[in-house]
Image (tube, rainbow, N blue to C red; front, top):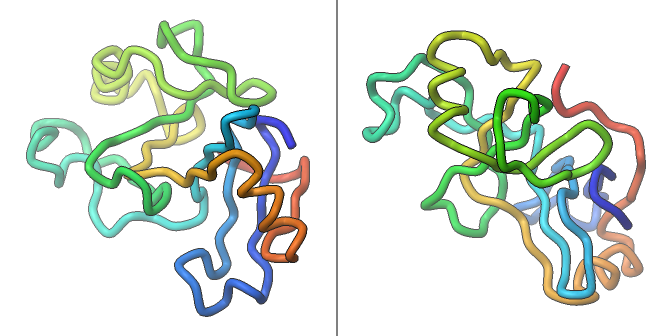
Length: 147
């Protein structure tokens, strides 16, 4: 497994929080794995969050069940958003959030450049490997995050 790969839930998770989830893995190392559900729009938009009520209406995604009190973002614009960490081919996680918000609000960034998530998915060391081995997930290199 590596950052930039996609997990798709199998029928074993059909009665679970992860039913029909597609997850972009953004980190895989000896401590564990991290990723975001990319196919689950959040019920509210960015400007509907109190702290960002003066921002533009921009889609949010339910990234996962962990730390749903915080926003996370994945983007394709390291030339505009400093400080991001590589998260797969041409993708970066995080960076200077204030810069990202400013670029969203002036429409320099679009949905093709950035995706905002509430929460994330996380696994402890070897946890994801065990779930893949039991058949809960299929792993692939193909998938589309920003298009």
